[in-house]
Image (cartoon, rainbow, N blue to C red; front, side, top):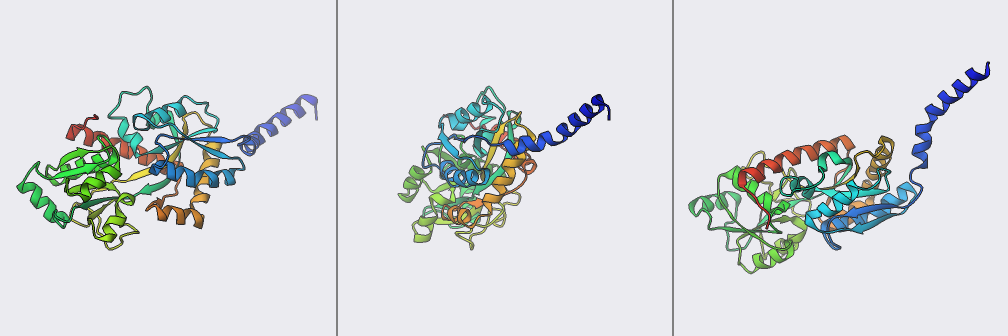
Length: 320
């Protein structure tokens, strides 16, 4: 074989194995997982459950870094601006799809960050003070009779809990008045005291109060019933057909991250979500694992971005 032909064949062979070599080479150093919420938040809890197992699967430590502020926009922008090499990841959430319609930002969550894998859902719930209407139908009837006089609490203006309430208003044709708090926990304190009638909130915040009888559960928010309260109907089962919403969390990377790295991270994430110890830790926090492909995660981001943009516009939602 002539030297020039041998050289050409060698280059072809090298080109064929280069992607595999590149994939085996990643990762060669620790990975940073950026979380846009403070320690102790649902996002932080999920990150600290997932990070060590993801590190085990990849053979390198995954270090959690909290960058709270601006509804997680600070963290998201930091990852958008990071090198697209797979070493800086974002724990994205529903908040990011909401923020796109509430804030003026220098990036686009749906295009400047690549979806890697959906991780989990923190199911929501509608709970009431014992003095409030006891069913969804009774609540709707009372709100129609007294528009604007029944108050619901949320974890803050522009949060997922706030938008659950506004979506409920839009789909039922009623007007519950919104009272924003600085978090789900202080909102629950006022609900327990009877200062507000209702709360839209992640279930983990209030399930213990429901089980103790201090609060009434009216319905779960989402497509499935809550594992912690399996007898509780969903809003769709309660007569509000088509009501689908959730608080989800997933992994994102800068948009230009190589596909081989995205696929490697997706496989490692799907594997860790199947681990019994991860499922047990999630269940203790009323969190459900949601493994899937990067394409499925991308479709969810697009769906939620459109949905919340419409709710924000129609309900004229503004942040404080």
